[in-house]
Image: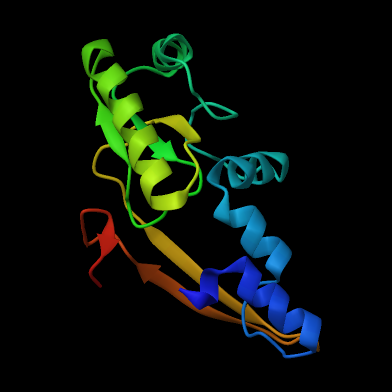
Length: 156
């Protein structure tokens, strides 16, 4: 999607076109889930327990999983749409989950970086949408229920 592409936003910025959306810097930052987690943590926004960086070695994944408890979910850092997200319920499933997630991340996003989080079963996905312009005008569009999903894709 162009609306989520930091290169597109940057190109607009360079030629003076007003891009309606986040700045290229924000899109770049939020497009990397590991960096986004760090920013949220720095801002004291609660985040799901997990690794504070990418996990590439199985031994590291095992240690993180033991620290946060099973089930865990492996996620590509540059991913979206649920691609490459794999749940592991125990150590036996973890190695395959790690390798599969890394392979899917490489194939779909060109980067094998993945991270590990505690898997939250039956979560609620609520989005809050805020629009602001360069003149200081800000509106809040309210909450949006996004929990009804199929394969991590919002249906409503």
